[in-house]
Length: 378
Image: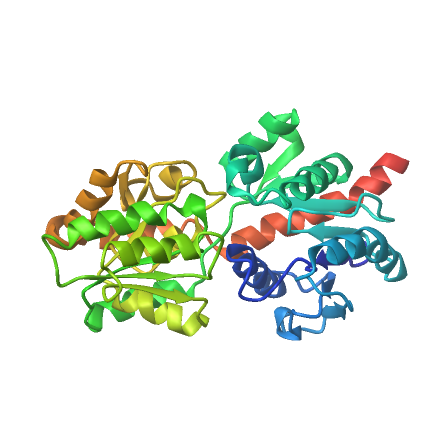
């Protein structure tokens, strides 16, 4: 069988502005380059995305497109009109769409991955002028893609529920964790930690950061030596969160880093005394997995998929109960037996999730999608 020609639709990618979906794509491509030496990959990029998105391998090729992802209407139009023509020109066997949306028509089979269905579960978190685009284009992707995948079992359930799909029509392909985080756990054994709590999150409403800050204000009544660091790009809730911090007189005690380089993020994981993740909704929850791998004592919301992802390796709390968030902070920094148990359990739990496993499942998913045309035409 000749090598498959696999297209990767990265037109959605805006470096530093799309959160976990950027980490996903970068890590997935590197892992595919390691495990797959046979097939050829063509990565369609926009004006904002740098060529370093592609691994330095002969069988990976960047196909730059003169369109800006920051202007979403044009990006979507390009995806629907020019991208299919590019797929035909390159004689692709399959086009993989890891950013929710896909061409309605394409000359080759298409495979589309959904990280979550937040617009269905929590439409109130979307701007009124964005929501119609999400409804239309995601519905079209579900109906027109040859095959579908979900980034977690919770997203799988949502896709089946909201789009009336058969459970066996959606593949679940969970994310992995960067191997470098396990090295951070080794560094934490020899480097001193500092008195701050860490949360890695985009500043969006569903991340529940206002409750985190209010709980931290009460936590400081008992542990005033601690700071809170929230690392992640500014989102729709950034201004409101800053107002909350100021109203609570926490300006000198809470740091919002904004987007930071990966190396700086690694350093925060090494120095943090504990990690908290209070989100009310997640498609997967990659920061929790990274904290576990780094051996940081962790507490997170007891929602799916976080509940299953972390298991006994993290202290869990109800995200709408401020008292429980504050109590989790106090236990994470004051209960030495709990800290030792979580530090030991975290990396062991995270080892179940590797990017090589994600890449292997993705490669099989894409090849099966490519073969769909030959099966259906026979």
